[in-house]
Length: 243
Image (cartoon, rainbow, N blue to C red):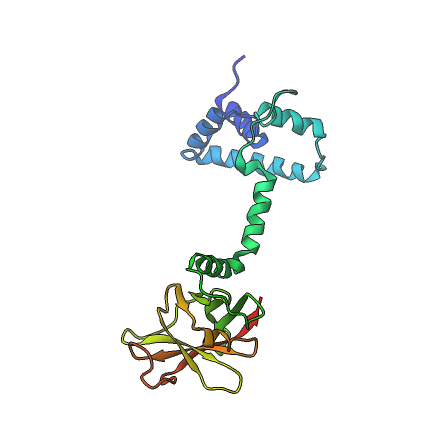
């Protein structure tokens, strides 16, 4: 007894909706459905009839042995007694260290500054200064940080590192100033606004650096202020802190 072709198509649609066809059979049916509206209607009818049944099936967590067998069959587990070759991205410790590294991103500028200072030639120590390092975050009035400064008081060196691009015209330059408490600004020198710069500090300047002093950056003509005091706009300021 032969099964009519239409009955066979209906059965295939039912098997498709149930998900029991293999990949080749599914592809063949999908190709036929795209050309046969009646076949598309039969498939839609079976899907509407069978899919709601899945809503009544209660989810059951498979036993751990099932996942163990799946991992073993996929090659993620090795036979007992044989060391397992682990890839670096499967290592939990690697991801933990990456997380720690991301959390420490805010310390990069300070680390660069200290490294550059340690590489600078050693200057005579300044006995009057009690701490070894001081830092300052030089920011605009709205809080945007433009530079960080790290001062090695023992070696009389300072490193200024850009944290954000400052809008400085091409025919202007940036100059750094030390403002001790209740005193006039002292010129420390011009520096490039967009890359790290190292400055040597005379002993008399180091002696005036304290937690009450402020660093400021002004917009000046090439070569710096011609008057010994800021002549352009003050771009950013920052209180000094001992470390």
